[in-house]
Amino acid sequence: MYIISRIIFVLALVAISACSFSEPKLTATPTNPNKQAWTEIDAASLLIDVRSPDEYASGHLDRAINIPHDKIAQRIAEISRAKDQSVVVYCKSGRRAGLAEATLREHGFTRVINAGGYESLVSEKN
Image (cartoon, rainbow, N blue to C red; front, side, top):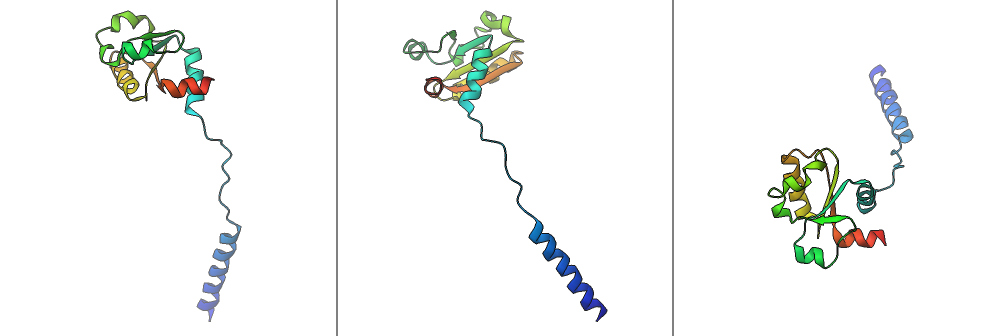
């Protein structure tokens, strides 16, 4: 009898604690990556469009210089002054910018941000 009453007591405690448990409420709002990118772009020392020259000519962000992603390593001397400054790279979708970011980091750049795609950045700004 003593064991049964102990089991009932433990089950009652479990039931009470389960009823009082509630899921934590999420208070953080989802972040918009394009808004974050614009914060970085506005503060960046150097903005690099890593698309092709033709893509760059069809439209680019103000202050952006054009260095195609596959030419970054060859043209590193042109931008070496920004090695310890904020550098933002973008392309059409973010893939080439990711490749450029990796190359810049391999060459000692410490503050490189992949801002993603040009079209989505433009639509967020407007």
